[in-house]
Amino acid sequence: MAPRRRRLAALAVLLLTAAAPREPAGLWSGPMNSAVPATLAGAAVLPTARAAQEFIALHHALPIDVSFAPKRPPDMAPGMIWLPAAHQDLPGSAWLPGAGRAVLQPDRAQAYVAAVGRLTGNDPGRFVVIYCHPDCWGSWNAAKRLVQAGYRHVAWYPPGIEGWAAANLAMQRTDAVSY
Picture 1 (cartoon, helix red, strand yellow):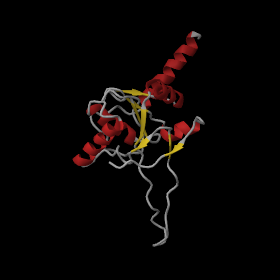
Picture 2 (cartoon, rainbow, N blue to C red; picture 1 turned 120 degrees about the vertical axis):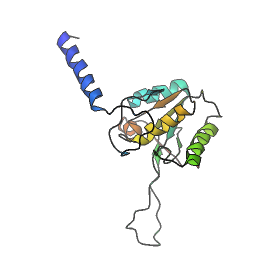
Picture 3 (cartoon, helix red, strand yellow; picture 1 turned 135 degrees about the horizontal axis):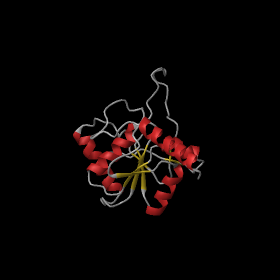
Picture 4 (tube, rainbow, N blue to C red; picture 1 turned 45 degrees about the vertical axis):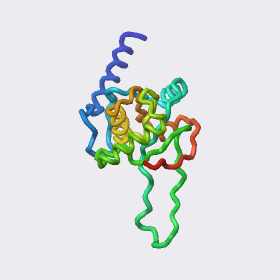
């Protein structure tokens, strides 16, 4: 690459990094749908669908979706049956809705870690990939909770479900796991 192109590429990386917020020391409690940092201390960051797909295949990682469950529309007529659309996920995923909330009651935070424990055979060395939607702190918080709980191979996939779908990769219908 020519020197000028290298400088421009380095400048672009610098600008993108500068635009991302800094990683907070603890869990994020601000707006859940806003720009996320480019890093998560103690975890790998998978910036693309291809990186996530390769990581999952290479490490037999368990993908865990922490996106919220859809709510009944408030303007629906009382008594009308509401069936949310099927939840689409990365193949092999477990869906633990809302596990990335910044503030969980202590028993709910422990229940999340316990549910991941059941899903991983209580192996803190098992590879896991945490995700939800782009620009959503929920997956960042959920991954951070696992790092704090002693999981050694946590990966965070910020592009989430939409990033995977945009790459035209296979999806599967997933039901929520109770925790």
